[in-house]
Image (tube, rainbow, N blue to C red):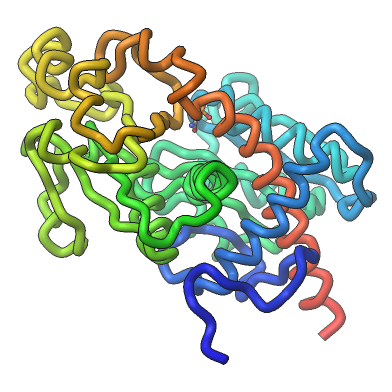
Length: 325
Ligand code: CP
């Protein structure tokens, strides 16, 4: 029987990936997406229980060149729950500050034989570059404006566990699309799983190649979120801006910030998501962000641990299979 986008043919066992790196969602097959979500859902059901120590004896290095709270901590929690040893490299305290290059830093770490490097970097393509130079598996924890694959996977897991499906849902991703690796990864993942994904953004915050991305674009919040099941808000990433993209944060909030009035255009039971960190009063009103009936924001963080458990385990299993082949 042909597989639809909402079916898998296996129980939630450890996943093997097509590659021994996890660099992005683009190009990932639908079956792998489903298997990662199914395995992560098993971990989500057992976050407070003991699970099999499938990463025992493994060393995982968190190499973060950009700030992070959610991603770095949840990778560490995930790795430790599966029995791995975790090292956190602080770039501020490393030889990067003495002028060492990204590749030299990574090959230096590689010489100590870690099993997995979790990499966040401000340059798009940095994890892909490292994957060409080192033996350890690389997992992309967010690279520039390019991709944030585990964020998209945790978003998909949150949605699937809330709605029981992803296929057929209408999902509006709103705000600073140009600078958002989350928007890109979610378009590939949620679109690949059969959701109708829309982008809602001022034209100044859309990438020049938006026409090639195959996504419906709206410049008005009421039109863009109309009848949507999920409204996902994005932070204005001022650290990547040149300063001319929005007239003022106040005006941006009036036009594109989510508040209870604007939310009325969405489906009656629409849920709110945000990858964090949030800027309250800029892209989202506190009343909405803290509405426990409508907001999935804390659930997203919780699902981040489960997804990272599934991804780290998948990389370990894939590397073991590669070694024994
Ligand atoms: N969503 C996300 O990547 O958050 P952090 O920057 O805190 O890791």
